[in-house]
Image (cartoon, rainbow, N blue to C red):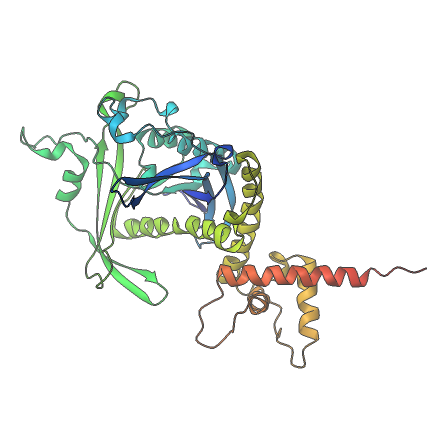
Length: 396
């Protein structure tokens, strides 16, 4: 019997870039190639900023429930990764000494907070393709769904020739037959069809870590777009999971779960574009981390209100909005010659918030997005504050 899943934990790392006269007080994120000087020397810039690795809990309908873990850090120096690989194999370095250890830390913190590991699926991009993460998830009794980056070692089939490359995961996955086709929504008005195949492969740990970690039977899913439109790279996803995939419908279900990973990117967009996190003038990394933690709560609520109205448009408005927000919207509507709040539903109230932010509400307009809801909520809170001041009259 398949375990019921109620939420996915979408993990993502983002950068907040700042311009400071003394960048050393904050730290650095990475170096970039900014072209060349007139004399021909390369212009390498080191960006000042803070990195944030967050885990966002999302329901299967796309409603964000909140952050389950977050980690802030900066970098002080860059050792040159490519030069370092010539002397040290990164697969033989303990994961505890790597920066990627944050994926395991967030995984453990999320499970402690949620308290139901069997009902969670941890979704990550190719940066989270870490064998130690797979083993940690297995030990904690939770599921994962990760975009594959590394062509890992696999147990050689019994009928393979001595020089057959079937000891690699990609070779065995390529040999699997296509299971069928599945249609997904790429944009609001665009759908595309994918060829889908899957295979359960006995995956081996890296050579330098085979004494510490044991092999795992993981399921790999390959989804390839059949007819991509011109001007866009075709969708080519290779995913790995420790959950059972027995047929095409189960593989298509996992593709839908992986699509929820973009919710974490939308959440970071609300932080940067809506709450303008990169315009802060704080001078130290510690103060910026505290500010970003506060902004994360505000950004989540904007995201939560927007997606809740899409998931349950007929819900009561007090299930998401506060009493002060509802009262302000009611008073705004009562002042109109033709009231617009005909039904007391969450979708109707969200529409009024979006219109405060500039949403035109025409017949063919898409649903209100996070940015227009952020502008509307900002204005609504100012109005609600004015109402609270006006209602507290003093005598004498």
